[in-house]
Image 1 (cartoon, one colour):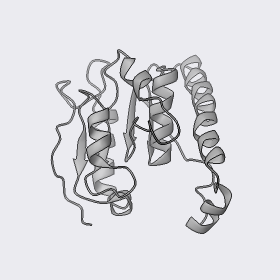
Image 2 (tube, rainbow, N blue to C red):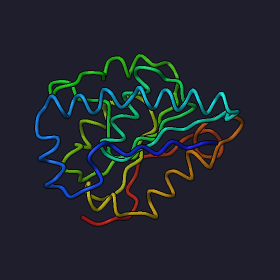
Image 3 (tube, helix red, strand yellow):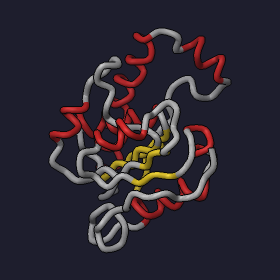
Image 4 (cartoon, rainbow, N blue to C red):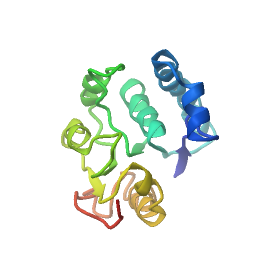
Length: 182
């Protein structure tokens, strides 16, 4: 299994630097939209080099890119978006319906129940039948919950069974509280 772990543009500085750089809606939407093409090129190159299984994962904005890549290309073996969802309708970039039309059951999201940016109640519904796992944390505290993040990735990427993503037995994860603090 080859894992592509995404990092969104402008996420290598402070929050203030990020806000000044990405300060317009146009810049933000462009950043997410154009990020899918390099991911697709990387998935294709990894497959050409002999990787039969490629997973795409990312936290926060990178998770949105993973979801958008699935909606547009669906060429990776599986997707593990963390603290992100496909429901941006009514905000600025609507790909929720396209995401839902993908027939593959190859997405294994992890959400934070107390996320102030990626609303659990809205995003959990948008995954429409996919196994959504949740931790009892906020966006930032969840991002710092390294053991929980590792467990989720190990379960869905390291736990490949018979060519399928998911927990042993192919059942995926179950929703429920898993540690963490606000």
